[in-house]
Image (tube, rainbow, N blue to C red; front, side, top):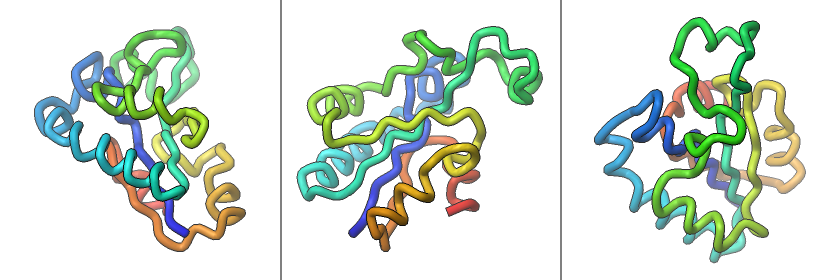
Length: 135
C-alpha cells in the first residue's frame, strides 16, 4: 500500500502571505494530477496543512514569519486545482491540521500510516524538507 502526503499547498504558501512564488505555482497541475491518481487507485491521501491561530504569541513561528495559514482564513484554502480535487473527493482524503513544521510532530500521522500498512510514501507540496527528514 502507498500513500501521498500533500504538504502545505495552500494559498498563503503559494501566492499569499508567505509565498513560495512561481516554483510553487508551476507544480499546481502535477500535484492535482497525482492526488487524483492516488484517490482513484484507492491509495491513502493526506492533506497535511499548517494551522495557526491569529494571536498565538507563544508559537515560535509567530516571531519568525508574518502571519500565515490562520484558522478560518482564505489563506488556509488549498491552492488552485488541488482544492477542486479535494472538494470532489473529500470523503477519500484525510485532512490533517499541523501546528509545527513536521507533519509527524504532535499528530497521529505515523500511527495512521502504520495502521494502513503503508510501505511506499510520496511527498509533494511546499515546505517539505522537515517532513522528509522525519519520514
